[in-house]
Amino acid sequence: MHDFTYRPQSPRTVFGAGALVHLEREIDLLGAQRALVLCTPGQVAQAQQVAERLGARAAGIFARAEMHVPIEAARAARDEARRLGADCAVAIGGGSTIGLGKAIALDSGLPILAIPTTYAGSEMTPIYGITEAGLKTTGRDARVMPRTVIYDPALTLPLPVPLSMTSGINAIAHAVEGLYAPDGNPIMDLMAEEGIRALARALPAIHQRADDMEARGDALYGAWLCGSVLGNVSVALHHKLCHTLGGSFKLPHAETHTVVLPHALAFNLPQVPAAAARIARALGGVAPHTVAGVLYDLAQSVGAPVALRDLGLREADLDRACELALTHQYPNPRPLEKAPLRALLQRAYEGQRP
Ligand SMILES: NC(=O)C1=CN([C@@H]2O[C@H](COP(=O)(O)OP(=O)(O)OC[C@H]3O[C@@H](n4cnc5c(N)ncnc54)[C@H](O)[C@@H]3O)[C@@H](O)[C@H]2O)C=CC1
Ligand SMILES: O=C(O)/C=C\C(=O)CC(=O)O
Image 1 (cartoon, rainbow, N blue to C red):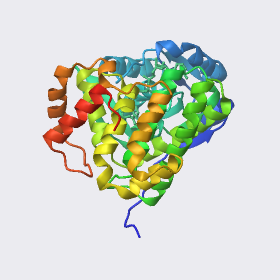
Image 2 (image 1 turned 90 degrees about the horizontal axis):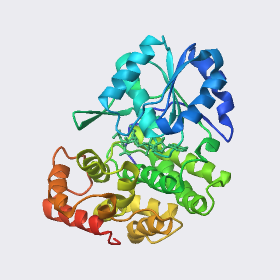
Image 3 (image 1 turned 30 degrees about the vertical axis):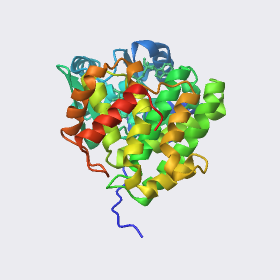
């Protein structure tokens, strides 16, 4: 038997191919009249599609979302929302765009409707991140949790295949760490296992055929499950390493998750047999002691990166990365010591199979 406390935190979720048709209804349910639509410069066409659907209730489009939410973009978006008298924000895009919406909500309490187009999972979490003077601060705050999420796999069809692969593995990482989180619970375990299963099934299919709607739907379903896990439990060494490498060495987010995950999991595996058993089941019934290697093989088989050196990290940075990862540690099942952590980073740098 488990001992646990479970207080679900989840936005209203509408899921399905073509689900964008429900946007007006969902805006009505929020009681909103003027929506500011957020996107990156690369997703203006999708933002226009949203604005057209909203008609007179589209207050405008703010197309300056970028990775890790620079404070300048957050301030400009807040000003624009005020100037236009927006009473809600619709964020269409990946974690960067949803993160911009969260930065507005943190300040103003503006309700966010998220339409995720990657598998990163930010839409399901009360976690925000803002970067100021080169330093990224993250935190949890109920105000930033989107009120409504519309998942429409059709909107993920243009997501480039390489980013689809790494973004999917970013999602798997949330579930893996959820399975050994000290504040986990049986519901999260079920969601994590099913999320890994869905993504491990979907990614090879999308790799073969980018417009496979069935697989796109499966991947987004997995992203919903894995994002929900991230929103409800704390994360450990794997996320700490990725935040260190992304924050201090500017490594790309999803790619870094993809490279680090097999190594962080191998490091913790002896301490987490129950998690290993669930991951093994989700990966098709492999032996639990092999799951880290199987995740490495999954990444390699879909053409995703497996070495930090291929993401722009220099070998000379490894000592500093190790030091930073040892400061302000996240709770981790295996105590962190310098030598094994440095060795982990070396293996990830070289792209060795764990
Ligand atoms: N707060 C949270 O809970 C979480 C936050 N994040 C944050 O999110 C950021 C990364 O988000 P990601 O989703 O990985 O990438 P992203 O949002 O930066 O998107 C990467 C690129 O792909 C483009 N793109 C996205 N969807 C597309 C589509 N369907 N078709 C064509 N192009 C598309 C975007 O416009 C962008 O240029 C990081 O800053 C990370 O820290 C990530 C996960 C959870
Ligand atoms: O860094 C943030 O914006 C907050 C959380 C995450 O990015 C989660 C992750 O590492 O995927």
